[in-house]
Amino acid sequence: LQLTRKNSKMADSVTVNIVSNRESVKHVLSLGVRLAYSVGHVLNDLCASMWFTYLLMFQHSVLQFTNYIAGNLMLLGQVADAIATPFVGYESDRQNNLWLCKYGRRKAWHLFGTICVAGSFPFLFMECINCSNSSQNAQFVYYGAFIVIFQFGWASVQVSHLSLITDLTPISSERVELNSLRYAMTVMSNICAYSTLWVLLGIANDEEKHIGPQDLSIFRNVALFMVGIGLVFSTLFHVFVKERDHQNFASREQYAINEASDAIEKPHLRWKDWFRQPQFYMIAVLYMATRLYVNLSQIYMPLYIQDSLELHKAKIAIIPLVIYVSGFLSSFFMKFLNSVLGNKITYFLGCLLALSASTWIYYGKGSTYCEYELYAVAVLIGIAGSTLLIISLAITSDLIANSTSSCAFVFGSMSFVDKLANGIAVVIIQDIHPCLTCCTECKFYYKYVLVYACGGAVLLGLIALSFLLTQSIGERRNEG
Image (cartoon, rainbow, N blue to C red; front, side, top):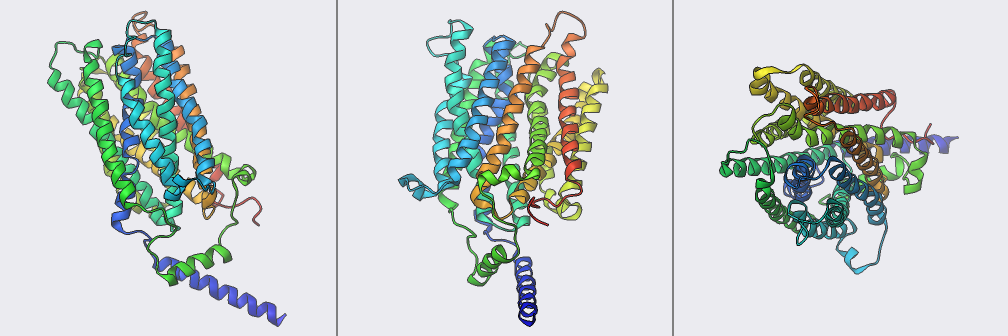
């Protein structure tokens, strides 16, 4: 009994010392490494901004594809991404003796994905080479091949980059900061893409109010420019970020973290163990709902501007630009807001902002709305999207906790559900798309997409959040 009491006191003492050491350590990584990490996803972000925001418009208005062909090309990409994501997650978690993996198991996949993305993406915004006069079904095969290569590469970069967060630092607040910096660069990437397109559309100075086949060269040049910029930032990431656990820690601090992992942290989970954790499914739904809101609003805002509001084509770059500037600015306050309110309340506030934007779109009409109020709606969407995305990633990182060897599988699984849901949603929206000239209300179809589809995604996120309110994120099922 005395021995038991003695061991208990020693364990309590170790726990207190560990917690004290952890609280005294604010950063594992230097500022330079944190910034270098944040630019590792820029190529993906630049390409994703073009993919989600303009691919459907490019296929509809420039290539003159039918709704069915355009929707199924988007679905093909999302399915390819959904399949590739858990595969890459599982493989990047494995210890492999392949010579390339000596470079780092995460960074090796990142490098491979970068090559795939850079080599395939520009072809998605070009005419079908030597087959531009072929049938749309034949062109579907041509573009589909490049889409599959692009999405596999995109998934490789995304999963490996996200998985590095839990490998690089065990500190929850620093993980939130890395997610914030990562999202800030995502927003900057989108700002770059939209600004470039805005400039080129302004230079074109033709008499056409809407996007059409005459704008093919503009989209091609923007795609090539995005890939060039992305490759520069990918190089910086590979040069300055080293794939090592708990980098730059002193031996005493490293010892404290190692002891904490053994003494007080949650049990380590293998990839197959996650299927027995209820929170794994709840957070997957929450993450899926978040991505549905962000992606659907990104995809259909330009079509809403052109077809429903019938504004000048320059607005398809200006309004998304306002959305991402707002998101960028709000991301810098996310760490403070999260530390004061916590993940759950912050996510709830983001949902309220998103629902406010959908409500405003529903009631918005007239010249005042088009000239002024639309910018306020864009600000709300930007802040809401930034908040929901950062917090959903932070919640996922908290779910993983110290199970870093299976973290890529977790992120891959979340992304699998997200991509599949997005692809199915787009196909359904495209399949029930009415003829815009068939009735007076038909042109407002994209307005209702932004209201009901995006608003419904937010409500789904709130339902998932409600199941997590009474739980501690990261609590394991086999824990008492």
